[in-house]
Image (cartoon, rainbow, N blue to C red; front, top):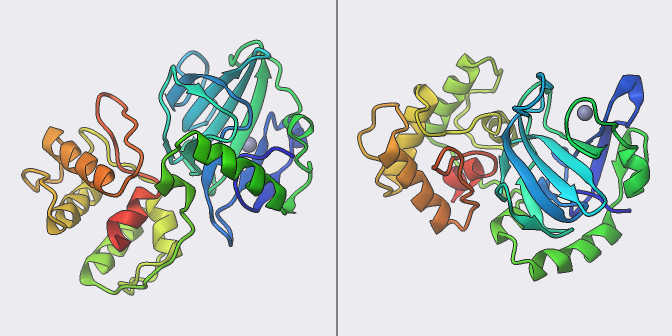
Length: 279
Ligand SMILES: [Zn+2]
């Protein structure tokens, strides 16, 4: 079996079920190494929001990799990616972090493989068959895969932080966390506003990124916590201008997190949130 995870994961929706064009997988429940690794090497032909050439597919942030058999692998609903368009990517290399962007009701990866191109009209192959992933819902034990892919990952010098994101919460309490929980609840979550940072608060946060020109209460909160930690984010005005984005990049470099760029700037998202609060 070849899988896009280093550790155990869950099949949450099989390929072909009610016309499902890919397979839905998740590592967000339990073990929680949510790094997505490349299942078939090739060239990255797209990183970004959705698929600009086609009609809306609800894929959110996605990465597309073309392999040497003219197959296009789509990794969708990501919270963050660690490679850029044009990169040559090896099988086993860390490429992204699982998320729930786009039309998605929970943290998971939609993995799809299209023959000959990645437009809507191209045929979606049976991705479960190709990879040897059991095509039924449930937990998949992935020990063998972890051993095989770990060596490939280190050989490719993939970002170390992205590989080892099993969470070890310190359950720190602060008014700042309470404030964050209030902000997230105002966006529709139902977190307990207890000021303790744990998996529920992290999973809610992972629905968001802070990118250039983003504004609002979460942006201001992020500026404040970065400033508190000594990063220069410019004026704390709730608007992610260039100086705020440089502050974010300095933080990402200090923590050895991915610094892939969109619209000329890095962005904060995925497990960056964990390191921002716990680090
Ligand atoms: Zn899906």
